[in-house]
Amino acid sequence: MFRAIADVLRQIAGAIATVVTLPFRALARLFGGASRSGRRTGRARRV
Image (cartoon, rainbow, N blue to C red):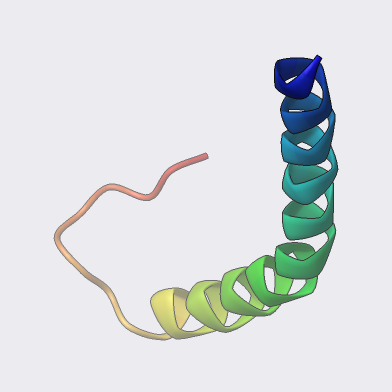
């Protein structure tokens, strides 16, 4: 019983964490991509 409740709460927390971190990931990708394209590095760029 308690395990089922804990699983549901864990899933809800995971969904909330995903929604909260999405904007920050998008911003990081935006600024990371902008800075990466501005200067050339030795690493191959992921597609």
